[in-house]
Amino acid sequence: EDRVIRLWDTANWRERAHWQWHADKIFCVGFAPDGSKLATGSYDDTVKLWDMATGKELMTLRGHLAWVPAVKFSPDGKLLASASWDYTVKLWDTTTGRELRTLAGHANSVYAVAFSPDGRRLASSGDDRTVRLWDVETGRLVRRLVGHSDEVLTVAFSPDGQYAVTGSVDHTSRIWDVSSGQEVRTLSGHTQDVTDANFSPNGKLVVTASVD
Image 1 (cartoon, rainbow, N blue to C red):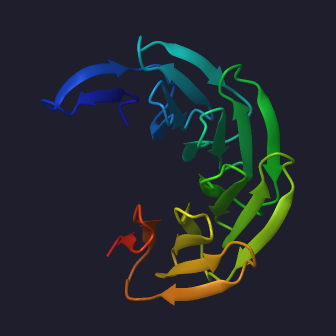
Image 2: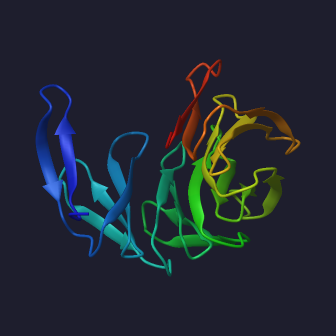
């Protein structure tokens, strides 16, 4: 809540730099795949891009009407997706800062976004209990993943892009077939909200985290 971004050196765990340019609390951060840029999302309804070589702010991305809880770079680093409590997802050009399109369709706040490994699909999840799969090039809604009985807090693709994993306030994590939109399996065991879930790099394991 101090509105500060801190960069730490993993060689000695010392603070290398810190920046304080958002007007309100910072909720999320994300590196570009090549490490050249950093994106931050804030309660001030903006996204900022930072140059990692100089530590300087590159640009402020304005357009959301509510706070931004998630930002993700595309696998090639050319696009940035941002999720917002304004019920939308936005796609941005990371070179120019231009808003390319707004993905509208969620009936409530959007909490998470994830690009497929090939960068062709974007998944978004939120308060309306659904996951939506979008075509990145056209902005078209490809399909909805429906099955959770409460807010969907997180979504991630498997390394091969065939599956997605989600975590929800309904205490479950679910595995989905991306091509069909069908639920493959429900992972039960947590007794409170599942706040994060992801596949291992080889796709053989799924890890889930919870408030419990």
